Length: 424
Image 1 (cartoon, helix red, strand yellow):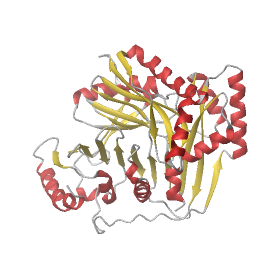
Image 2: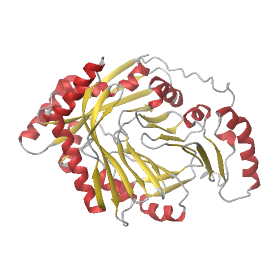
Image 3: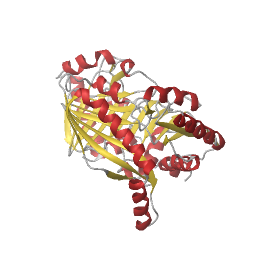
Image 4: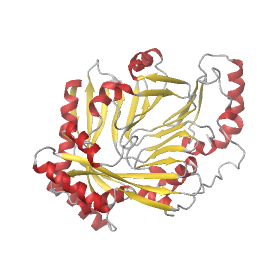
């Protein structure tokens, strides 16, 4: 279904049905709606968009109906198995202290069908009118995002500080305190006007071919604050008792020519340091999963090719035991060694010592939760908008033998999907 048809024809019909209160939970079905395009016409404060990389699934949640605490989650999903909740953790947060949000309007697109479920507003204790969510005051399908020019920016940490961080890691490896640690850095851009989160997300999607090789995530918290991620990394998905994840680690650039690209891929698959970095991640995920599963299957190694970078990756499938809950999986798997380190307890301490900031949303789980189907991505390759400030992040896995300059370049490559919009 075209966006124009939904806005002009279906919204009035939906509102009439909501006013009649004919059913407790209004559910509507349509031919497939492009939810990323529909966002252009949304003007409410709270927005959560999630397009899966691995499933034919996209989600758009608008507004706020309920807040569910982590300890209430299992019972809530049993009582309301049709509901989809959104969740966005903080990197340093204990998963058992997290919260889950039930949006008011929930669009779920699977294959060629879009389903809309509508819940009462938390604020009004009634159904919100469509006019509170959708703006039809500009010409449909001709929305042109305007991104202002930045005025100044800074690196955090700076290049010389980064070198000292890697030197400190070498000491930790030599002392056998760590096997691996993931360090991040960020670029902070200042503008002389507020940044429109939706306009920036629209530009990001257009410049990156609608993020075909990654998840596409847009979480607007307030009108001037949002988190955007084009992450390649899946924490896990859960379809009933079937578990899917991926061991993703080690990086190499993309080549300018096909021959150069194959040479970089060969390096990725033969370099001892890169093989060791990825093997550590795979082994740790499997070790953590074993107590919760009846069986685990590792697929053959594949190279994940993204526009600017390529990674070693191994898909992981498992059958979960009946007693396993969603929070158990998050608590066990986050953070993976791909964004944390080994051993994790020591890596956690050293990350807080070496990185001069809290990660918060960066590298934290983010996604949707349902009784039958749930999926979480890892919020890397991301940007944070806060008023007139835009921050982008990049991280790298550090093991013994890592070179500070090479890791600095790698983290810069991971920022490219955003830099191509910022510097346009």
